[in-house]
Every structure is written in structure tokens, then in C-alpha cells.
Image (cartoon, rainbow, N blue to C red; front, side):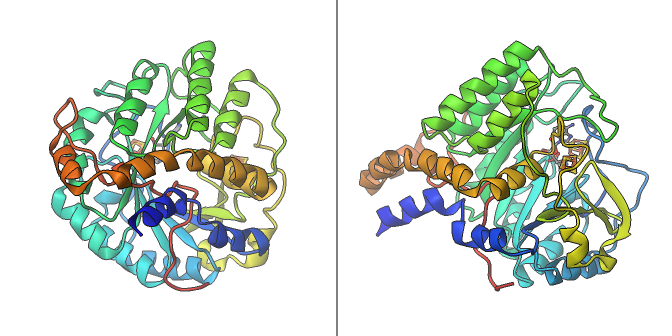
Length: 380
Ligand SMILES: C[S@@+](CC[C@H](N)C(=O)[O-])C[C@H]1O[C@@H](n2cnc3c(N)ncnc32)[C@H](O)[C@@H]1O
Ligand code: SF4
Ligand code: SF4
């Protein structure tokens, strides 16, 4: 039974039935809600924070969340700015879960405490993405394992599925491989991805040498094919390689339709880079469907969550098929783990990683990816 459970977990990330439902109808799959514009950090590549703006109120956020649900949206990703600086973040998670959303939160992790992780878990948070760019902080980004490693222990017995995502640019590239290894060696699904441009198509930081970047992406494709927990699809890795090579990719952007963003002022945004002045309260399903079209900003687009959903909608069998094959490669190791006696497990869990930390919850299960499904409480 335990073995079947573990095998099921290797596939649970891609909840095919649930995602499939949204592949067949006209309703949205996911909304990313900016719960605040404020942030406690200042990453040099980022254009998504603004400390001159106040937090939106809990009342307003709940009103927008209800509307997002009424549109039929299945998943909500709480983003920012830094979501953990919002004073009502735990209530917001609870509210999303009460409405039946599959709920995730993306954070720089600096404000995480053991108590807050427990509160978020109790509120029903299913997925947490912690952003980690380097092993040690730099003037470009302070998001490093130096801060995050000691906090991984908070997730050891947590039901929250943790995954790690890093940004690759010239500053981080020398450490990107170590970031990937550090996450994967603890059994945490981990992804590092190319820095993207700002809404005016400018890169805020040096992107790094193209050939080296390409070699690194190639190595991730190889590892993904061998079943390692690289937390993105092969389709997105191939897409990033095409970006580096300047190759044209044929796809139709579903941002503003299958996934959309809501700003911390309640405005409907097509994606993090393309904004509108329309208020979310005025948006209809027809408005969403009108965004199902090729867009002039597609060439070079770095909004990977949108590209990922678009590739899935465009070629569901191909994209899901490869993911299923990659995850199936993990099954032999699931067998080995299940055959390990409890005594062995106890010994293993007492063994710490070289830097003194233990494996966390991801060590025995594969967490859902940002574009994956998690079980929903209510049907929409
Ligand atoms: C805008 S942040 C908000 C949540 C939180 N403050 C954090 O850093 O995780 C969401 C994600 O976008 C990533 N990001 C921000 N600017 C980016 C850029 N120019 N290129 C690639 N990723 C970027 C961050 O690293 C983070 O993983
Ligand atoms: S922590 Fe997140 S929101 Fe804040 S500056 Fe960095 S990427 Fe942007
Ligand atoms: S192509 Fe990219 S930038 Fe343009 S709307 Fe789609 S996701 Fe946004």
C-alpha cells in the first residue's frame, strides 16, 4: 500500500484529470494574485516590487479572490512583491482553501519561521516555492542558500510541498549548478531558469555568456530525461534553449485566458509583463477568451509559467507524455525506498547532509510543480 502511495506521489504533481478538465473547457486554470507590491529585498533583475504602495486590505483581497473563483479558476498562486510581508497572509491562504482553490505561495523565504510554516500548513497551503539564486548573497541578489538552508528543516514533517526556483544570470551562473545540486540532493524539486527582460524588453542585469548558458540548459535536459526532480517540463527547457539560440518557436500564448494575473490594486493583468487597466471585478469569461490568440510580445517571452501553460494547451499529449515518462524513471528508486526497513529509515533520517541539514518533505515525494495540479476541495 505504501509503495502504491509513493508511486502515486511521483505522478501526483501532474493531476491529469484536473488539468484535463481545463484543457477541454473555456474557464481559466490559474491566477497569480499579487497580495502586495511591497518587498523586503531588492533583487537587481526584478521589476515586480514597489515599496511606495500600501498593502491591499484583507477585505479587498477577499473580494477579488471570490471573483477569481467565480470565473471558475482552479488554482491560485499568491505572489508579490513578497507575500509574507502582508500581515494577513495566513488568513488569505485559509480563505483561498475555503473557496476550494489549489493554493501555492511564492516567497524569497527570508521571513519564514517554524511557527509561520506551521500556520501556513494549518491554513491549508499545499505548495510553496522558495526562490534561491545563489549559495551566498551578492549585490545582485540576496536570495541564497546561506539564508534558506537552515530553514529547510521547518519542512521536514510538513504537508506543504516545497520546491526551489532560481534565476540564472551572469552573477548567479557560476553558482547555479550548486544551487541545483543543493536542492536535488535533498530531494527537493528544483529549477533554475534564465532571467527575463522587463516590460520594456530591457534586461536589468547581464544575462551571462550564451554558450555556457546553453551547456547548462542542455545538462538539465539530460538530467530531466533521467528522471531527476528538475522542477520544470522538458518543453520549457527546450524553449529556453531556443531562446538562447534565437530560434523561432511556434506557440500561442494563453496568458489572459487559461492563466492571468491580478495586481495588488485589483487590476486584471494578462501576465506579469503585460498589464491592463481593467478591474478584475469587471472581467467576464468572454474577456478572458478574447485573449486566446497569438500576441506581438511572444518572441523572446520569459514568462515561463505562461509559456508552460500555453505549450500544454497547444500540445497536451506531447508535453504530458514526456513528463510522465520522466517521472516513471523515478519508480525504481521509489521501490528501493519502500523496501528500506523502518530501522534503516530512522538511521538515514539521523544522517545529516554535508552542511548539517536534513532531507525535507520533498525527499520522499515529488511536489507539484508551479504549473501542476493539487487536489481541489470543491468542484468548479
Ligand atoms: C517577483 S517574485 C515574487 C515572490 C517573491 N518575492 C520571490 O522572490 O520569490 C516571483 C519570482 O519571479 C522571479 N523573478 C523576478 N524577476 C525575474 C526576472 N527578471 N527573470 C526571471 N525571474 C524573475 C523571482 O526570482 C521569483 O522566483
Ligand atoms: S524578493 Fe521577489 S519581489 Fe522582492 S525584489 Fe526579489 S524577486 Fe522581486
Ligand atoms: S507572450 Fe509572454 S509577455 Fe506576452 S502576454 Fe504572453 S506571457 Fe505575457
